[in-house]
Length: 436
Image (cartoon, rainbow, N blue to C red; front, side, top):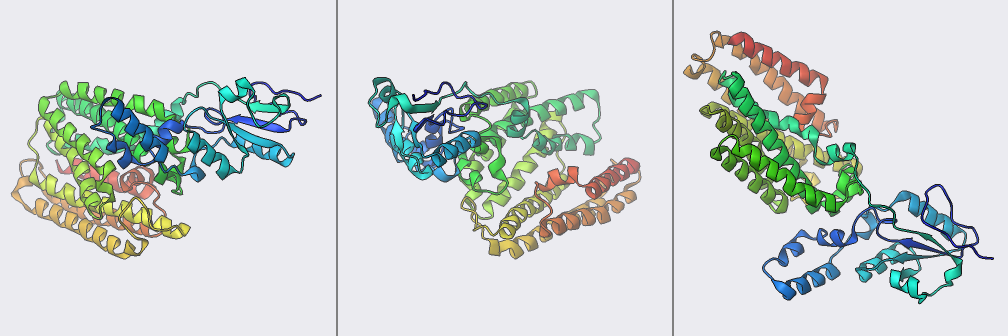
């Protein structure tokens, strides 16, 4: 007599006598929400629905979702469920998906995976299915998945908060080290960190399809299905509201700078990052905005020397980052990136521009040390000349490591993880303290 399977249990296999395996698409096979996958498959089409109101808006949205170009091959499928399906197929069982919405996409997924078709929950309840209901095993929708703390830390890019330490630079270079100044700088750091985490989540939502085809970015929490899209959508406004509250505790002007950072970041995610060299200038500007925000938050006058030096430094680092990404694609034998206006053949030009920007930064620093601007701040300004060879060393090392395909991270993050870089940075700090 045939047996009927119960709720999906990873530790219990389906009865070997079952001739049909029925799998819930959402919550069992797919580690994501199909509706939201369709929404974020083509951000441009998502924006196309704005401006339409009422029923017309909903009708337009329905058509957009139905025509969404989802990359079925790279969706985050549950490996355990897939293995059970393959085992059932090896036993000769038929496999059907259960999907109650977006039937066309569900059918396309079934066809891509080589399954036999799609049924709805209503079909199962009514018995109007193309198989014997008494001979099925079912892998049903499990409880709602909740991301753990490690997943959230990964998704929010907490390790990227190292970049936001740039807000402390104006206070340090202006020698404003009072508790009040450091307190405002810390609050600015928290505001930028929350704002940046919301922007990272939004960027990952808009880049889902491209990230899943990337050799390393496919492991990001959203791309891998470790973090539900709906959870990310809830977290984004919460993070930005926290950043707003923290900014208002500093000053309206700081809020304006942070708002400019957020607007630029969103523009970068939507369009600017796809423009050749525009993305580099934008990234350099976003780094520099952190320093501007630090000056505004603490209430010190931003030195034009620091501003110009920062622009050259961050332009070089942005170019090194792009060089590293392209070189890794070349090593992996991948095609030119679809979401960037660069080609693997551009590597030599990008490396040359990165080196030129780095040398310009060192030149600006040398001119600063030679100027009268250092006299009020340093009692031994001649010691600052010792920073020049260290800067040359660090920029040269960053370029060499990227050329050797040994820099998978952002150059700033790499500096925190690379031993020689940490030693060089520590030596720079010691020299600056000795020069005061």
